[in-house]
Length: 289
Length: 162
Image 1 (cartoon, chains in turn brown, blue):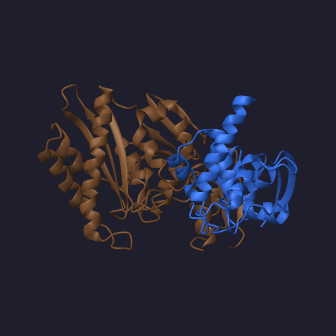
Image 2 (cartoon, chains in turn brown, green; image 1 turned 90 degrees about the vertical axis):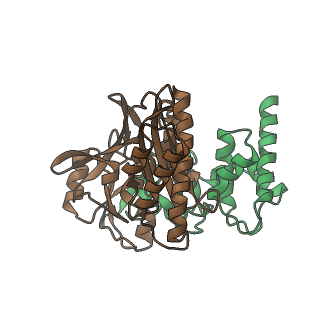
Image 3 (tube, one colour; image 1 turned 180 degrees about the vertical axis):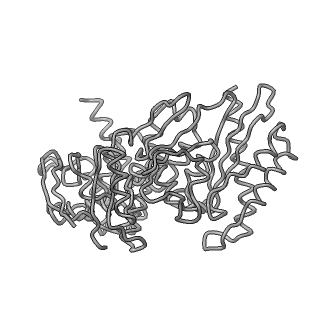
C-alpha cells in the first residue's frame, strides 16, 4: 500500500488541525478496520491521525449521572469497568462479540460506529441504550444520537476535520435492562446475519414504561425502530404486544440478499432475534426492580 | 513520507528502529529487529499467527502500525523461553504434538500464555473461545486444547508447591 503519513497528536485541537489539512486523512483508534482496508486497497489515506496519545481518549469516566467512553477505549476495557458493565451489560456483550480477543483488545465502539458497517455489533446496542456521540471539529463540538451518525454502508455524516471524541451513555434507569443478540451460523469470529438490541424500563407491576428496539445487518445502517418500542410500552409483554413489536421490526427491515442470508430469512429472523433480546432485557430489568 | 524513529521495549530490552509510517509492527519486528517468530498468515487479523502482547494485552501485530509502538512494552514468542529452558506452554505443545506445520504455533503459544496468566484454570469452553482468533489448519485443535489443559494443570501444581 502507498505510504501514508503518521501523526499522534496530543490534543483534540491538533487532531482537528491535521484532519482539516488533509481531506483524505483517517483517524486511527484500534485500527482493526482501518489497517485492513488500507492494506486491501479499499481506502488510500495520505495521513493517519492516531488518537491514542490524546488525554481522555482511552477509558470510561462518569459524566453527569451517566458515562463518557473515550473514542479509543478498546472493547475488552468495557468489561473491566464494573459500574459500566453493571449498567449496560447488553452494550458490553455486543462490543465483546466482535472478532477475537486480539481484535477486541484494540477495536473500539467509536471505530465500530464510524466504520459504518450495517452489521456492526456494538451499534444496535448503543442505539437501544440511547447513546450519543460527541463530535469535535473545526467549528466546535456537536452531539448526535448514535443512530444518526451513519448515512449508509461505510459512510457517515462526519464533515472534514471532524471526529468522534467520545460516546455518552445515560445512567441505567430504575427498572431498566438492556440486551443485544446477533444471529451467526458459527459461535464466534463471524459477522451478524441479523442483530437486535433492546433497552426496556419496567415498573414494579411488570408493565413496560419505556422501550427502545434497534436492529442491525438488515438495512443500510443500524436502525432505531421506534414503532417496535412503542408496541411494548404499556404492555406486560403479552403475546399480542410482542407480536406487534415483531411486525414493526419486520416492517423496518430492508436487507440485502447475500451469502450470509436471504432477504426473507433476514427479515423473519430480525423479528425472532428482537423478541429474544427483549426477553433478556426484560429479565435484567426485572432483576433491577 | 517521513520515516518514523521508534523506541520501544521488546522482551524486556530497549529496541530502536526506523520504519515507514504505514509499516505494520509485525513487519518491523520481523524485518527491522529480526524477530521472525511472529508470522504473517493473513495480514487481516483473522488468523492470529502474529499474536504478541502490547502493554500486556494480546493483539495481532499485523493490525498495529509500528509507529504506534513508541514508548510501549512488547512481548513476543522469542521472550517466552528462559534461555534454552522452554516455557511450560512450549514444552506441553511439544509433548502433546499440538502442532504439525508449526506456522500458527507462535501465535498459539503467546495467546495460551496470556490466557493462563489471566485465568489459571480455564474450562475447555473458555480455552476454545479465547483461542478463537488463532487458526490452525493442521491439528483440528483437539491436541492444542489438550496441551493447554495440561499446561494449566502443571502451572497450577507448581504454584501450589512453590
